[in-house]
Figure 1 (cartoon, rainbow, N blue to C red):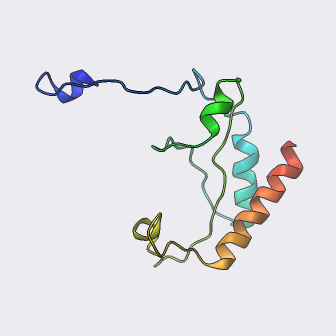
Figure 2: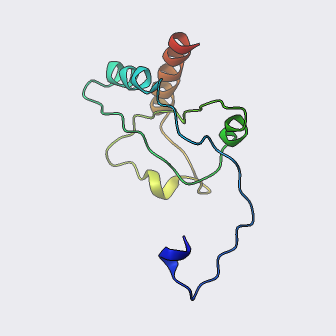
Length: 110
């Protein structure tokens, strides 16, 4: 990181939560298949997202986690301006879509 920001900025590591050395994507195809069943033509893309979840505690135990809660949002939905805002919300049918996807995942990988 120091190489990226240069020598004029001092970086200090204050906290580090261990994560898996390499992600295991052995369940990715199952999750992608569920999305394609529920939304034909959907394309699942693995992604690393900045932020903190409880997954870091499972990583210490060698347990791979997936942030899988898909939402079917309307094309004009302003997700990025609403996430973690005072009026954060998503449509109820988006939650129903995600709940069905998670239910199917639990049936298949449980």
